Amino acid sequence: MARISVIIVSYNAAEQLAAALRSVAELPEVKADPNFAQVIVSDNGSRDDSVAQAKAVYPSAVVLENGANLGFAKACNIGARHASSPLLFFFNPDARVHSGTLKNAVDYFESHPDVAMAGAKLLNEDGSVAESCGEFDTWWQAFLRSSAWGELPLFRTQANGYRLRQWDYGSERDVDLVVGAAMFIRADVFASLGGFDERFFLYHEEIDFAHRLRDRGMRVVYLPQCVVTHAGEQGGSQQTWGKSGVLGWRQRSRRLYWIKHHGLLWYWSLSAALIGRYALYAAALVAVVIVVRKAVIHTP
Image 1 (tube, rainbow, N blue to C red):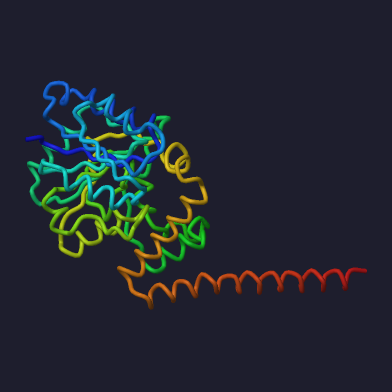
Image 2: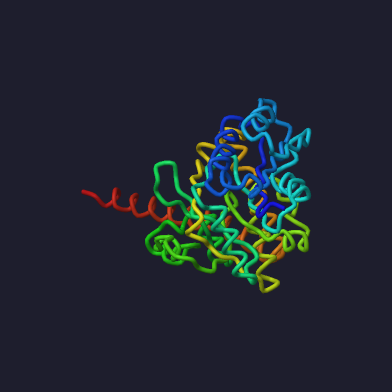
């Protein structure tokens, strides 16, 4: 039996998918033992040659043709149902895995039975470290994020993930959530929670899952010994979905997440505050206009 099942959801990203699969095939642990990793490609009705590329680059991969774009969460769940190993690795097609990552993850989970989910250290394509994990929003942090006030010097230290942005990602630590581009989840835990919530078509499915884990007292960790280069939105989802599509799905998923985990009162009060800030902007503008007019009138 494989030690780990690598699950990649593909949708019209043939060249990136091929590169991702090559990075898995070239891992020392996979070269030494071809049965170390089971590779599963869950294809969401790609119109390019994603399926053909997957079969050519990684002949032993299980390629599932879903026939239509079912969304990321559902495609992951379909892939997980075909997994045969105790550890799942959900891996974006716009990412490349570094040497030793799968072995390091397997070794870690075998020696830490209390850990349910983990994330890899993500690198940008220029080699710089990307934000690889995060924190759950409080009401105030959600307001700062959605209003962009979190970028103001007065509020920056109160913004979501501020402390993580001051950290070098060089050490293992427990975190609230990890980025879905490269995440490890125990297969039995994934099954016991019913997999990802398929209402999250794109984005926030991993945050929702991590939140459900926390509600059950289960650990989520960040693992610096597992390294992945990730193209990110500019090289991945924006090319596939377009910028407006990415933003639209992100907003829909964020709204669903907030309502699911915080309730309608929390969400509507946040919405009212976000709308209300425009009244503050308008009042400030009126005040400025009045001051300017008075200054002009009294100028000799």
